[in-house]
Every structure is written in structure tokens, then in C-alpha cells.
Length: 296
Image 1 (cartoon, rainbow, N blue to C red):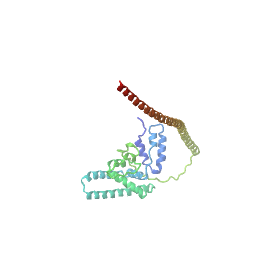
Image 2: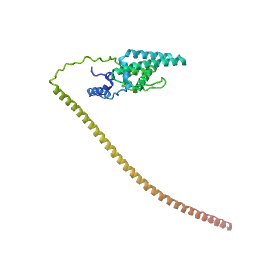
Image 3: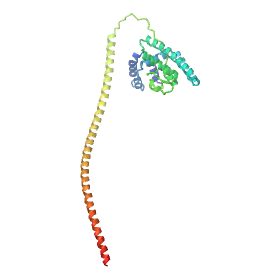
Image 4: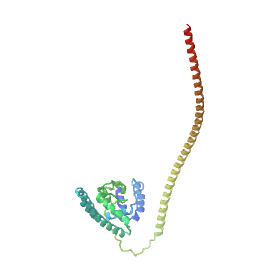
């Protein structure tokens, strides 16, 4: 059995990280998985927006409360079908109060992580939580902890939930709860490492090798793209030459057409004159024949 993780497992790890750590951690994970089927999908994972990251953070830190909110949302969806207008307005008010309270908690969690959440971002967080209560699919997206974008819905319009999550299988997945990391006391004991220089050189060599490999891959991609550009440029020049030849041919044909049109006009005039001469001769013939018949 392969020990290779699933894309969902890797995504669950990455989207639980501090926002600033996401991109370097993702790239490092993709490099670690190089040569496997997961490397490209992991590299393609999108960095979450700030609002999406705040929601993902809250889902992992307070999964129980999130689950309660989603259950309340489901109950309210079932109940609102038979409600009057006044009851629906009260329901909307209660829903706003609940999502506003949760948004305040989520902002506090983000602040503990050293991230300041502005009012516009907080509005996106609240809109996402509201969407999770209004729509079952939005609730599934929030529960996954794999949001990459905020959600907005009125409950009537369709929401492209798949575009707001990191991976297609996110819907139905539940984020792994994670507690806040409590830093331990600093280690003030400094133990000199006799191999520090060698390790530093090895690390530098590894970084150089990796950078060289990336540069070679980029160069190969550049050469391939350049060859393709030249191929299309040659094809373009060929088509331009064919177009020019066709234009010259059209010009020649247009001149020939004008000449033939003039000759056709002359021929028609000659035919009309010949027709008139024939008609006159036929009338004279018919008159002579009639005269001959009267004398007989």
C-alpha cells in the first residue's frame, strides 16, 4: 500500500497554516512530491483570500460552534417555508446577529495570529457565514476548511461553490480541528555546531542545485515556446503571401471582367442592329410572297 497522501490530506494541512506561510509551504510540498501524480495538483492549489483564510481558521479552531451554526441554519431553512413576512424578517435579524457575533470571534482569532482584519474583509467573512446558513452546499464548503474565496448568496441565486473551494472533493469533507500553538519557553542555551559551516555549504549547494534545475526547466520551456512562436510566424508569413497572391489574382480578374463587360455591351448592340435588319428583311420577304400569291 502506498504511503502517498491524498490531495485532500495535503490541502487540509496547507490551508491550516498561517496565511503568509501558505505559498512557500505549498511550493515546498509540491517539490517534495515531484515525480508523483500529486505534484502538479498541489502546486496548483490557490492561496486563499484573507476572508476565506479567516473562515478556515475559525472552522479549525472552533469546529463545535461552526457545526452548531450549520445545524441552526438547516433548521431555519426547514422552518422558513411556512413563516409569515414578519417571522421571516425576525429570522433574518437573528441570523445577522449570530453571524455578526461569530465574525467578531473570527476577527479575534485572526488577531491572535498577528493578522489584522479590516471592516471590508469582516463583511466578506460575515457574508460567507450567512451563505453557510442559507445554503446547504455553502455550509459544506465552509465545513471543509478549504475555502479560497468568500461566499455570497441570497438563498435564491445559484452559487458556484466549486470555484470557491481548493479541490473538487472539498464538499463533504470536514476540516481537521487544530488548537492554537502555544510557544514554549525560549531555549537560551547556545551549543556551537562544529559542522555548521559544512551544513551551511550543503544547504547553499542544495539551493543552488534546485535553482539551477528550475532555471534549466524554465529555459527548456522558453526554447519550446520560442520554437512555437517561430513556427506560427512562418505560417503567418506564408498566409500573408497567399493573401497577396489572391489579391493580385482578384485585381487581374476584375480587369478582365471590365474588358469582357465592355465587349459584351458592344456585342449586344451589334445583335440588336442585326435583329432589326432581320426583322425588316423578313417583313419584305413576307410582302413579296403575298404579292406573288395574289398574281397566281
